[in-house]
Structures are given as structure tokens and as C-alpha cells.
Length: 63
Image (cartoon, rainbow, N blue to C red):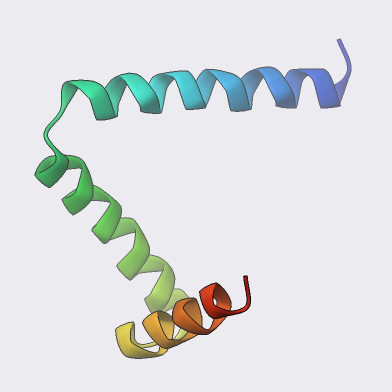
């Protein structure tokens, strides 16, 4: 099996795992966990929450 096929299978496996998790845990619980990941990414990017939300708002207004 080639790299692309293996990568595709891994991504589908993750989507399946995540969808099951979201369905079996409260919105509050998984949202809190996503917040930890997002905040970590923002710190790594040296971006404030406000800068991130402004960037996201600007991106959505282009669609």
C-alpha cells in the first residue's frame, strides 16, 4: 500500500474516531478540549485571541 492510500485510511480512521467521541461526550467537554488545542496553537503562533478572531472574521467575510 502506498503512502497516499495509507494516509487516506489514517485520516478516515481519525474522522471516525472523532465523530464517535463527539457523539458520546458533552459539547462542553469536547469544546473545552478543543479550546486547549486552539490556545496552544495561538501561543505557538504568538497570536492573541482577538487577533485570531479578527483574522477568522476577515476570512469568512471573503466567502
